[in-house]
Image (cartoon, rainbow, N blue to C red; front, side):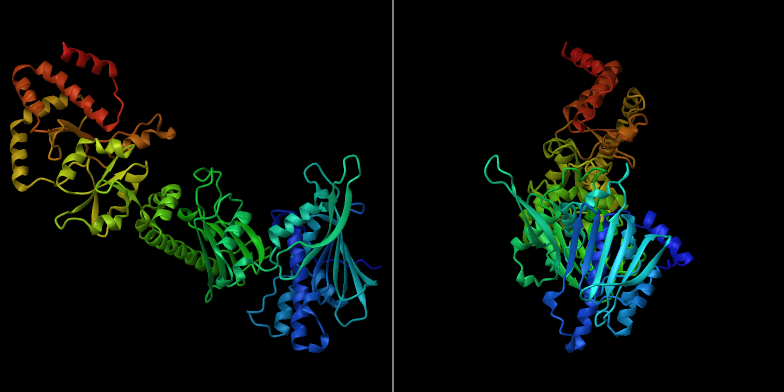
Length: 627
């Protein structure tokens, strides 16, 4: 029997394919099942125009058989089969697409879905097999042929006996190595698992003899019987009409497919046609997985091409800020190159990703408006990710995400949107006021919030570390600028009050300079405050980095040595009795004024939740005051 050689370029491609193109060896089964489905498709489509063929769709199937003794896996189909010439053309020349030629010959449009590419995918069998044998008989032919190869050394073709039309592929597995256990592909549970993972939605039944063991009475041998079972479900849920499905159908699919223990908070089921045609079934989980906010978490949607899974997690289909979404996309017109794993970053994929982003945003807005309780439950798990989305994009994603943000309101003591805040702003209100702190209770005790609330302005309470960074990059919302209650100028005073503060500040200019020098560079300024009502003192931020941002940044491990320092100003309340005491001490006892200045500064730090540099000095100053 003559051994025929692959062409030189085919040899190189085969060697590359076996050793590098496919990431996981297990996908050989996906490729061969897809090719078998393709062959059945060809027969079925021919029968639609030639009724004399008498093809009964219910008889079409794919069979898998395992032989542990011979260490073989056999995949058979009763599809259209191949002639000797087709075996030569399709299997002798790597990457020759028989499917594509078939579609052209029969003038089949893009709506006819043939998933296989006999040629490239077939050679994935050599990743696990040391010998691959193909028996094929073309429909309507009386002759069958055997194609056999051990890989790059070439192949043989010879006549053989075969009952019925179709193709049978027998893979003799490679010997086990320290790195790879090929025997695992002889285990029925492994084959069942791979079919479920990659080929569950092939439109024809994939059958295999499955052993079942039944234990009877103690001491007796267990009973073993074999059943020919269908391994795949065939009809994907996302291909069904929505009116056929219930919430339970979606929930059960999600729990089984994505290994969650509770139903999703909502689902999105869509069919899109046009420049990019695809089905999408997306789920928003009820809670974050344990590793969601860690580097170990991997985002992405399952990607299918005509019901065959190409990628377990296609990260390009989701922006990072929607990385919590689970689900899948199934498209017939994605551009795939040599391997179905190697998805080209083409125009269709980008269009699909943009449409999916829009669908997720619309679903969240809909939930926010119609199911507020569900949305707040969702937000408690994933709101932080939406905020990171704005911050990490330097504000570029704010148009997408700003309407989805929630903050606790000083007015209602519950979560409100930015739109709800702006909608009830007073006519004379210029800013969206916010305050930062560890908790709502801590923020409410801040001296800076008292006068803002007294003036009738609502404050957004920011309790997440990222909150102020988000508002800083957003700059504004609906043309209303964000303003921290700790900023230098809140513009709360009337013109008369501003003039009075200015006059008092001028009178006390020398005292303020003395107090500033006493604090020895700890503050950039000592001044009168326009924001204090009943408290004697507070700290304000003068620079780009706020006091709260300083705390957050310095809590990060990478900043443990190079500390960030906010530019702080010590502000005094001119209407508080303590201020009169300070003025008298400036005239009579500057040493005591220096001690009082340090005490006030320490008080202001403690109010802000900042630790004291020298707690002993503070304690001694308090004791002196008590004596």
